[in-house]
Image 1 (tube, rainbow over the protein chains, first blue to last red):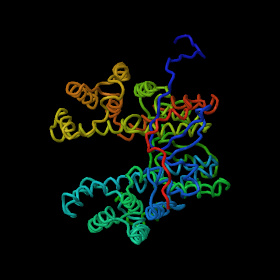
Image 2 (image 1 turned 90 degrees about the horizontal axis):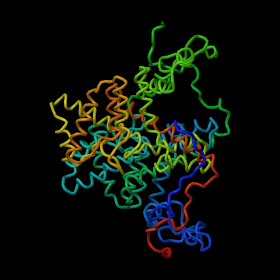
Image 3 (image 1 turned 120 degrees about the horizontal axis):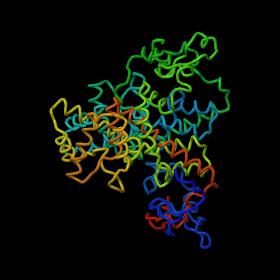
Amino acid sequence: MNEERSGESIKSKREVAEKITTRIWYEKGKKDNRFYPEKSICWGYDFYGDLLGRYSWTELLFLLLRGELPDEKENRILNYVMCSVMNHGPRDWSVRAGMNAAIGKTTIGNCLIAGLAVLQGSYCGAMDMEDAMRMFQKGLSLLKEEGVEEAVLELLKEYPEIPGYGLLYSERDMRAVRLIELVKEEGFKEDYLRLAIEIEKIVVEKEQIWLTLGGTAGVILLDLGFTPEQGAGIFLLSGSAGILAHSLEQLPKDWNEYPMYWNPEWHIYEGTVREEG
Amino acid sequence: MKNVARDKEVWEERRRYMRMKTAWPVGEEFVRGKREDFLFMGYKQIEELTGKATLMESVILAVIGRLPTNEESRLLNAMIVVNDYGTPSLWYNRVARFAGSMRVRIGTALIAGLAVAQAKVFGAHPTFLAAEFLQNSLRQMKESDKTAEEIIDEYLRDKKMIYGFGRPVVNVDERVPIILKIHEELGFPKGEHLELALEMEKILNERKGIIMNYATLHSAILSDLGFTPIQIESVSTVFFIPALLACATEGLEREPAEFIPMACDDIDYQGPPERPIPGR
């Protein structure tokens, strides 16, 4: 090993930092302090001067993601979707992840990280929704060339796991039905929703599965113009509310007020058993 | 996600037990509340592993359920150390440094960095994709007499991504020769996955000037040792930990928010010009 030389710095001659490009946000620096933001511009609008106080959280979320403010109907529908997946309840694995973190007395940020990590899974989570949204996008492009049944069958060949469809504890997820009802009452465009319902007719017959809540939320977000990645993000952002609430509730409790599953009577060992000696 | 258990009795049964392969209480004393010893992956944690198994052996035991041989352990050690890139130019390290700089706890900084390292274009996940590609290709070749060349041709024709070949920024991978050398020195023969990887590299290099990157070498060696793609990705995740800990610790030890602060004009805004809000 070479002799250790500590504390020396090797500087390059570069004087200007690399730039980040963005279309979303710009901060106008002060003349005598280029680090201090005098004005914050969001997609062309003065954020603190004009937007704050006039628009709701979901409207500004829409603007951040899309570059334009939503109309009233779009905002209502985005709210329906975000509210429908805001709390998966204390039995859900992602919410329980947050609660587990909280009972162990970590930071509330770590509770959210724990919950969101679990909520992004491809089983009923954000990745399932993202896949479903991609499947619907492909489906709509197939429909331009083929009849409904042919298009759906071709789609199912490419997506044999049928993301966005399934059961809620062995039964049809009626929360999804309620969300569809609400959106239909608004009379919004239903290009993707109609396709999803066509697919549902076929998969109900073949597999006895229906649109899940996440799948339905994804379809509606597509009709609102969101991409699959934006959809998955909105799903996680919405679900963070439930994770936060349930984690906060556990945070002040004693550690033994939450299941430990410590008693061996709870356990079934399915691992290696080695012979002694 | 269609494979959902339909039987309510299954849910009832599952809610009563925690099934696990990873651990088991050992000895009668445990039931009476005295912790005598535990099984970890089939071994007594205190009696058989503590002071005897190295960290690397413990990691491999956790991932594949058996202790590695001495040679396997040394090889895997080298495969992890060769990946200790400490520079915060790499996205995952930079994020750990950000987290440290913003005074996040070290474990959270590590998690942030590890999450970043689960990417498609770099990090641990490409080893899973490369392993899947190699293992599937070998299966196809055995089942249908296809050649490696035909498989590559198919991928190129269908414009499908071949994971584990090529590298961003530079077309050389300094990790490959040293690990191949250590692999040979430790007495490992070139298994069928490694042979296939080298053959594919030759074909891709001739056709497109593309080299095999470390993900493929790593996946090929571990596939030959019997690792599944998930197990291969698990081992790869450990690569990042030393450098992430170094970057996060440095961030925490320096003054807060000192790490590449940006001036307002360091942002190149390409959005719409300033405009009035719409009336409503």
